[in-house]
Image (cartoon, rainbow, N blue to C red; front, side, top):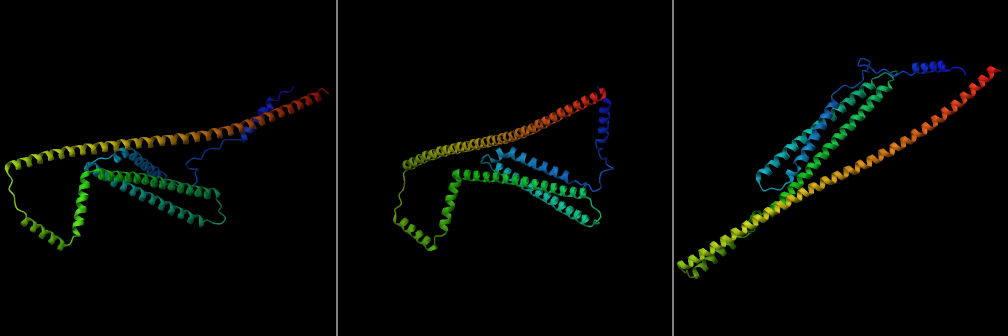
Amino acid sequence: MTDLTPIFNQCVNIVQSEIKPKRPLHSKEQPLYLIKDTFNKECIEFYQILSNLSQLITEIKAEYLAVSDTASSSASKDKIDEEFNTRVQQCFKKIGALESYEQKRQQMVKATLSKRWFFQDDNEQDLYFTTEASHRHQVLRFLMESLVNLSKTYEKMQRKRIQREKQLNSLNFQNINEELERDLDNSRVFTSLDQIQQDVEKEEEKEEETPQFEMSQEQIQELESENKELLNLKTVQLKQVDNIQQSILDIVNIQNELSFKLQEQGDQINNLMDTHSQVELEVKEGNRTLNKATRKNKRGANYLVTICIVLGCLLVIIDFLKFI
């Protein structure tokens, strides 16, 4: 048997010399048409602002939707609404400025490419500009969609707060009395002056016809005692009404907390379902890659076996010819 190791080493050296790893480009060797601006940095900062706003909404949601009678809480909530609306308007202005900048940049790039001579053909440069434009368009679209979704979620929360305040006002008995008085005043406005004069004349005639009676001190004392008892009953009833109103407010707050918990659980369940589906897809993709790898390994093993058999036959033939 002849020793073929030096031939094998020569083949390995030839292959290593031909297949060399590409040397990375230094900063001086990079192409000149690369875009060097602060667009990506500003987009990252803008996304950080949106994430902070979404975190703020999740933090203040429970306190914002909590029902309360105090005027200070409603004033603080109105202040929060104003601040959030100003921030959202600033975000819309920022994304509009980014879109206008990107449009102007693309127009300048098209103008420079159109001025190029017909013999200048640079497919790499064209491909770079097209991919960069599509990438930036997708980034701006993502930021706009996330900003719109954020404003919609806050708007829904604001509508819930207004609806709950209306329900609270409808439960308040003082507001009911004020509404009744307003209705009475509105109905009195439409009465005519002649009818008012007729009513006044009738009352004067009745007062003239009715004889005036003088009450004794005992009757006056009895009336005062009856009035005191009625006042005490009314105060007790008002206290009971206040207690009922407070209990209703507690029940509403408990319902709000339960709804928040249910919503959080629903979000967690949806996240678990999404992760389960993602894991299932990844497992399927892994099985496909494993099947491909096993097929390639089988093919490679078959090729190696056939090559070894052929080489063995050749060596046997060469040895046989040498002995002959």
